[in-house]
Picture (spheres, rainbow, N blue to C red):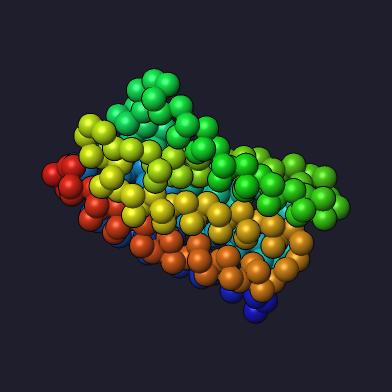
Length: 221
C-alpha cells in the first residue's frame, strides 16, 4: 500500500469518526444549524476520501479532472465558510470603520494560502489537474479568511466569537494543512502528503467535539 493511499485512508477514518460523532450528538438532536453545518463538512470530507480510496483500489490512480474526491473537499470548506460567514460574522462585524483593520488583516491567511499554492501550480504539468485543484484551494482560502478573522476580531457584544476561538483555530489549521496536502499531491511529495494528511486527520477528529464543548457557552447544547 502506497504512502498516498495510507494517507487518504487515515483521513477517511478520522473524518468518518468525526461525522459519526456529529450524527449522534448534533444532527439527530435539536442543535444549532451552525454546528450541523460543521458536521456536514465532515460528511463531505468523508465522501470525498471514499471516492479516492475506490479509485486507488479499482484503477490504481486518480483522474486529473475535477472529481468527487475534489468535490468532497470543496463541500467541506464550503460548509465551513458558510457557517462562519452566514451565521456568525454578522453577529460580530457591523461593517463600521472601527473594525476595518481587522477586515483587512483577515485577508492575510487566504493570501498566504494562495501564494503557497503557486509553486505547486507551476510544478504540475497537467492543466486539467491544475485548474481542478485551483478551484479547491480558492474555497479553502475563503473559509480560512473567516476562521482567521474570528480569531483576531474583538468580541464586543455577544461573546460568540470568543467562545469558539479554539474551534476556529483547529479549522484554520485544517485549511492550511489541506492546502499543503494538495500541493504535496501535485508535486508528488509523499512525505509532505503524509504529514499534512496526519494533521488533517487530527483536525477532523477533534473539530466537532471541541466546537460542541465551546458552543455550550452560548447555546443550550
